[in-house]
Length: 199
Length: 107
Image (cartoon, rainbow over all chains, first blue to last red; front, side, top):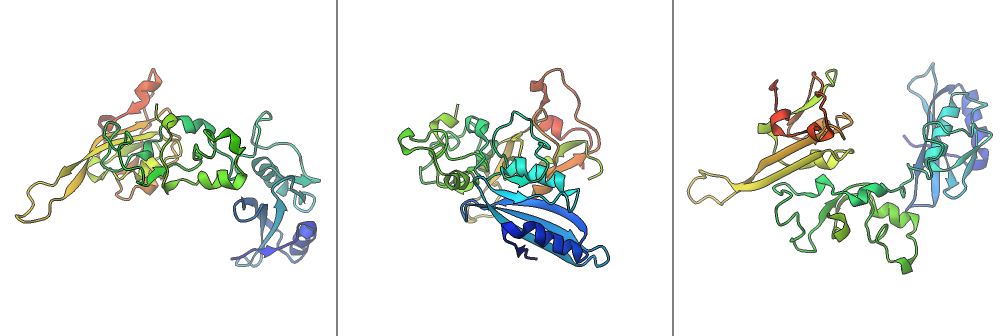
């Protein structure tokens, strides 16, 4: 099921038209951070028809990652306000005419935690239990870094490569969001665990 | 899924594959294992090894009981148990090893 692409400035009209067609059940509104593919946040809304449950209307639009803004749907669907408040605080976009209060995050929290370049900074200092291979223990030579440097090691998702974020060469300047996001996907990569990561 | 109390380790089924420790969002599972040659192979057979589990530890002070480890285990070596994890006077005592995790009710 693909989503019908809608221009951001006709977002309200497109949703209003779907509601007028009878797709009055607001199922959810969500956001996808497209960093690495495009410098946009994709906002998706899913509406259903109560008499024709098999039918589904999925609309999507794109707003810029920096300072993106979209018209609020809360005067069309009151329940959309909660979804918009969560989307706004988690992804760092604004809904014009929406409820500006936060839904889940504390008022002093900074940043947009569900963006793909949001890193789990505190974890860069912890040893990840999943770094060991089957048959390894904390005391085995491989776990202490004695294996060949070319060996692909498992790294945890959400924790960026120290060479990109953390121990980055200060002269290189801060890494771009797509570099940070790409380095934090986790999985098996050709990367030496930094000396600072092991205690 | 209804008996969401604590998580038990079914040790004979565990192959030390590390999948649970890698999938755990709370980083609360610690596994140590080593490899051992399989004994009693027929004469002339290629020497093979298997993983032997040395330590399987869940830190219940970190675990959020999401059940991802139970879902992800390819060998069904982790299972929900109806009784709840016992309280402890200090966080260190909430690190349960194989003795506690394979505990009372065998699956």
